[in-house]
Image 1 (cartoon, helix red, strand yellow):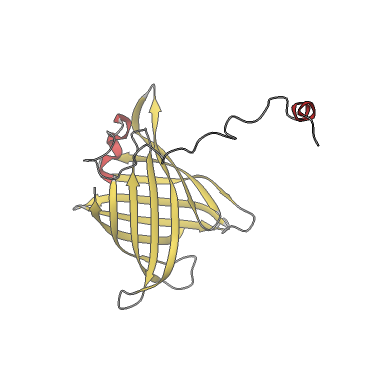
Image 2: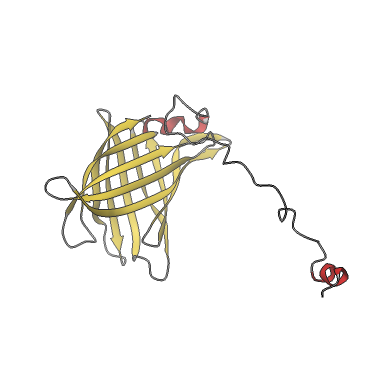
Length: 203
């Protein structure tokens, strides 16, 4: 039998405070893509306001796959009152009858306006990651309803896709979110990867 003196010697700080603590309630803070609900948008995000929402539509993908393919996509751009946007994208592939044929790329990340003396300008930073074991750091600029960004760095896991660079262009045109994404693999030149036109379905 282990004595209390031995236990105290092995763990001089005593048991951790959470060991016998009561359970906690669900996460108490709201994340929203609807500017009419939830927390107020942080003033630093006013330049990115047109992109906040839930978007859904169609697009076409290609490189690094050998053949082009059609897809449907849903993008959610939300906030929780702090000076960044949460970005989440889900893609599913479509056949010639627009029926789903399988899950495609998933991506999550954050867009952050660059603050100078506490005030935002047009510059932003973004961190985005996919299920392919790749994390991309983007730097870019948003002006009005146009946002352009290019990779400032890429990291990948030992078995991750050999992405070495990227470029993305977003724009709000006649109420729709249009974008084009280029990708570089193994240090080669950028090639078209994804493009789509999405309609606002929430927010």
